[in-house]
Image (tube, rainbow, N blue to C red; front, side, top):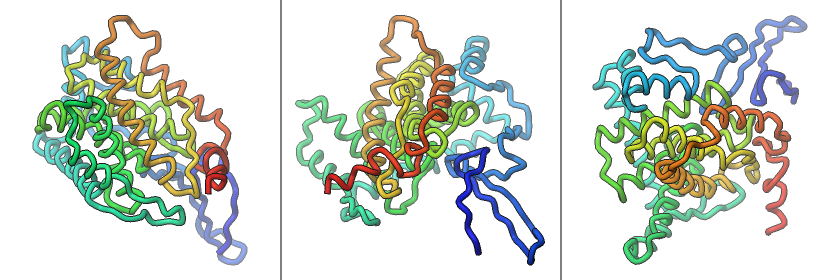
Length: 343
C-alpha cells in the first residue's frame, strides 16, 4: 500500500483511493471530508441535495429567512417548523429534538462527574468536575452575578472534555465545537427557564437554521476556513437560538448570529499535537459565554446594525480561504508550534 501526500484542489480534506492490478487501474474514487462529519465523493462535491418534497419556505440565505418571516408573520423557529413538518411528523421531530438534547445533557453530566487525565501525550487534566464542586460548594450566584459565567464555562468544558475522551457528543456543527450549543441551552435551563418540549424545539430549529446558512454559503470545516468555521459558527448558532428563546424577533435573532460570528472572524485552528484539546476545549467555553453576550447585545440594540448576517458569512469564508494553511487544522503554525516553549 502506497501513500502519496498530494493536495487535492477542490478541498483541503480530501483523499483519492486507487486500486491497481499490475499497471491497470481497477478502481479510483475521490472523497472529501467537508466538516461536521459530512463525507462526499467527487461526483457530489458542491452539489446541494434537494429536499424530497417542496418546503413552504425555501431559503438560500438569511435575507430569504427574514423575508419569509415578515410576509408570513411567523417567528424564525415557527418558519423552520413549517418546513420540517413538510418532511416529518411533529411527533418524529419532537422525538428527534429530545434525543439530541439527551445526548447533549448526558455529555454534560458525564463531563462534570468524571475526573482524571484526557488521553494523548499532552496529558491534559479534566477541569469540569473540579469546577462543579467549587460552584456547588460556594453557591454564590446571588452575591456574585459573574458566577453565572463559571457555570457556562463548566457546561462547555464538560462536553468538550467528553469529546476529547472519545465520549458521545453531538456535532454542533462539528465535534471540535460541540460544547457551545449545549452549554448555552444548559445556561437557559438553569438560570432563565426550565427547558420544555416547546423551548427545546425552538432552540434546535433556530440553531439548525443558522448552521445551515454557513454550510450552504461558507464552510464548517476547520481545515478549510480555520476555527471560525467551527467555534465561530457554533457561537453564531447558539447566540441565535438563545435570542429566539428570549423573545427576539427574526431580525434580532439574525443580529445575534451576526455578532456571534463577527467577533470570531480570523480565528485560527492550531490544535497542539493535532489533538482537539488545547486550545479547543477552553475555546468552547469562551465562545459559549460570547454567544450569551451576543444574544443580549442583539436584544438590547436600539439602532440598525451596519453589518448583516449574510455579509459576515461571506466575509468568514473569504477570510478562511485567505488564511495560511498553517492555521487551518494542520498543527504547523500558531499555538501548535509554541506550546513546547511553555514546558
